[in-house]
Image 1: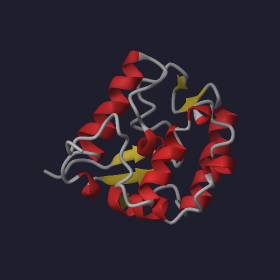
Image 2: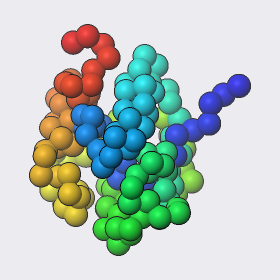
Image 3: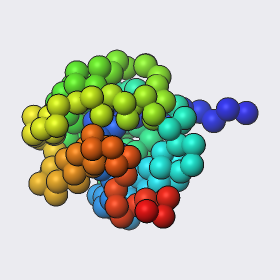
Length: 151
């Protein structure tokens, strides 16, 4: 049986790239780590299928700010999703592999996070910007704190 695709909001592509084990709650962090390290960064992770959604997704599932299929920060999240969807050329309902998503992120302008991530409260930590720089430099884009390849 083929596993179901991972449902992602557009802004969660860069969030997953830059994830380093931080989150809104212990449950959120454990869930994010299970998805990012357990699936996307695991051997064969580039083949993981992702379905784009504009509603709460696999990462949002245990978020304390989740409100049904939305978020208590709905306007900010909608702005993040719109900016990321445009930059990564993503449409709701589209399916792509994590490898294809990495290719799209690799092709982004190096400083794009300054605009598309502007409303994100995590932006100040620089995790996504650093991960994007590593990806674009050919360093496979993985967080140094969550690598599974021993490097």
